[in-house]
Image 1 (tube, helix red, strand yellow):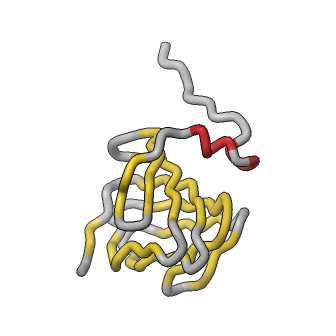
Image 2: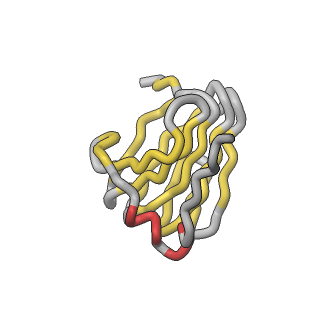
Length: 111
């Protein structure tokens, strides 16, 4: 039988114990489930951006710390955003943030 992964205290900052690696300029990733679907914690430095991209599958973002923005608004700690398949957006964080991210399929960059 496969054992579940367990991360206790994720909302209280235990995400800091994850092993992070470079992902994009100003963004590091702590992978929880690699592949498709994928689950990870992303840390955005202040001013970090992800360019315009499309989601072939659904994406779920839970903001753990700070705030993250896209063309639809700004999301703060505790906000849950679900981007449906076929949606497009760019993402940035003016102040820096940490998000839990689940994506069903890898994104396609538009730019």
